[in-house]
Length: 268
Image (cartoon, rainbow, N blue to C red; front, top):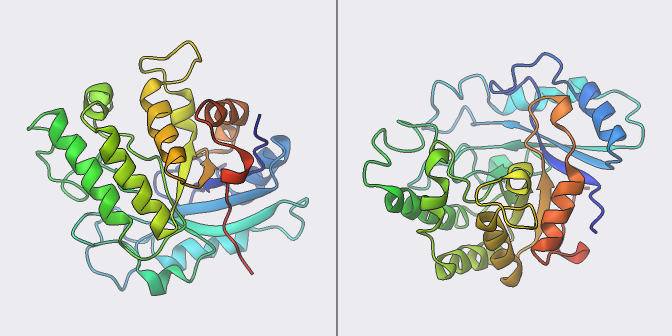
């Protein structure tokens, strides 16, 4: 069994989607200590104010706002290393919330390529009108495009069809093994790690005897076969969402992922 000592996908109340006032660094530190973590990555949502394309939702979630989280870090972190990163946005056509230069303000940058619930911004309002194949093809295309941005540490919640979860199985069955291989080889070449997200470990869509979803076992197994590197993220929006690491470790093991496949950001 893998030993999980980090979580690089934590949102505090600085993110508009994490409205719980308890979502503070000290509270996440306490939860991390309880779960024997050695490293946590704060990854609030960010779109740089100087870049075009920002939506109203991203307004006031710029670099200065996200970096203000440093004011919450206590002097004593009980030996837990805190990395200050962000989760930016990608809307297609090489339009992202950060660029290579601005990414340098952070210890790490997470890249989503499937925030398809943000209709009229990340995706067209009518996405899905062409059926599951249309969504699948855009998931594939956006993943490939993100690997060509030239910055970032890792890709979060890969291929989870956010905004279309009721059609999850039909959508993912429209992505072939060859398409997944193209994506993960591109990610490897770009130096982008792949997140093992808490959702993929607990997803029950067509759950196999192992207790894990064949949909995501297939995806992450192919990633591993392509030589991808991985990291873990709970995508926590409140402290009590920290956890489930035994389940995530079991999922990774079922995919053939071993300790040497795991990476964390290298900082000074």
